[in-house]
Image (cartoon, rainbow over all chains, first blue to last red; front, side, top):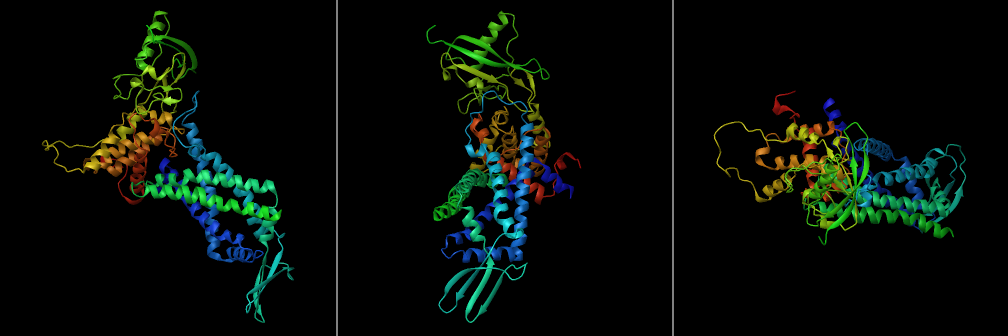
Amino acid sequence: MSEFKQTFNSSLGKKLIMALTGLFLCTFLIVHLGGNLLLFKDDQGFAFNSYANFLTHFPPIEVIAYLLYLSIIVHAVYALVLTIKNRRARPVGYAVQPKSDASWSSKNMGLLGSILLLFIVIHMGDFWFTYKYNNILGFKEYRTNLATNETTVSDYTPQVADFERSISTENNVEIVRVKDLHARIQSSFSHLWYVAFYVIAMGAVSFHLLHGFQSAFRTLGWVHKKYTPIVYFFGTWLFAVIIPIGFALMPIIYYLKSL
Amino acid sequence: MSGHMNLTLKVWRQKNTQTPGKFVTYKAENISPDMSFLEMLDVVNESLTRKNEEPIYFDHDCREGICGSCSLYINGHPHGPKKAITTCQLHMRTFNDGETITIEPWRSAAFPIVKDLATDRSAFDRIQQAGGYVSVNTGGVPDANIIPIPKVIADEAFNSATCIGCGACVAACKNASAMLFTSAKITQLGLLPQGQTERYSRVQAMVAQMDEEGFGNCTNTGACEAECPKEISLNNIAFMNNDFFSAKLFREEHAHDHAGGE
């Protein structure tokens, strides 16, 4: 056991933990964006609310979710530990700021990461915590006529105090009653400052991953003439362009709809 | 003496490791643009000596870019603003007449300042001694080229071997990390057939020594690669990481097996 302890306490071991947690968080972003694309469906939140309900009531997702929260904490704590050690490695700085060629994002990972941590705390507080532990969300009832496939929506007031959800079928009409997270999103994204904060945070995601994704592969030692260009391609176009823009479009579009 | 330059130097002066240092401004007058940066400092030192002042202390030896002795953090760049050269190969024509040049020592906790601009870089020696060698037992002299080595491997190993151990990578790194130096040594030996026997114990021993010296941790920014006078590639660090993890996680060799320890 001490052998592993020694490995993960070494400089390279700590970097390995940064890389692995970072890449795990990257894969989560793909899933998160994919699921949240349901927000763009014009169905008064039926698909999105059903999806949110599924995520919170499917045990394997719960397990992965807690692994995810752990990864965020470990990634942030190790970043802090490494940063402190790096500061100690140069107690006296230079009078002339270093002018070496290095990308802006690679030199500001700590700043970008701090913005992201603040964002994650606010974001999870507003949606995840509100959904799971706060009783302020209302419910929606979606009635789908299975013959015509037409859906009608209405507010639903639970008859019991600890009501969570229900799915039933009566007379060929499917009735889905779920928490209305969609309404929360609509109201949150109707404030301009809140939308601006989200867009800035997605900018931070972009620059953080522009360096972070390919850097993680370097830390793992996976540098190869044939495959490294592919890593750079995905790190740039998928993680620094498509994913942040996809996420940023959600608050922007909901804000425009709210006007 | 037409075309000669007059410069203002802001030089870090520090009596010894313990005493706090400060910047002192000097005039460098009548400097030929064809002088090297070190020759310019020689001229300044000569005038200081004549005035009975303590000359500026800086490391130098071969003055042809191969020994790794010279250092100097000049205007925000280790070895000055030009790519792929050491300070001794830097010509004064790189600068403009009347310019102010700030000269600082390498800044790293692992490289304590001996005096003025000279730092103690023996941390690098200890990393090298921890495993940066190939043990050769005595015997008959083998024929040259008896071990076939593919050209690409020989070239890569040679590229890593060009590291002169000057410490510019540490100086340039925002984390004062020594991973470019350490990885260059590990890669040079790890690529060649002669280095295979100790490959996985070497990487563990050298990384352990590097950590012990108090260098920072690489964040793959690539400033080291950009400032290295020998253009050592950042890919060396990935090679070291790969060998380190495969040694630690998948192999049974310990760091000092070959030395008979543990």
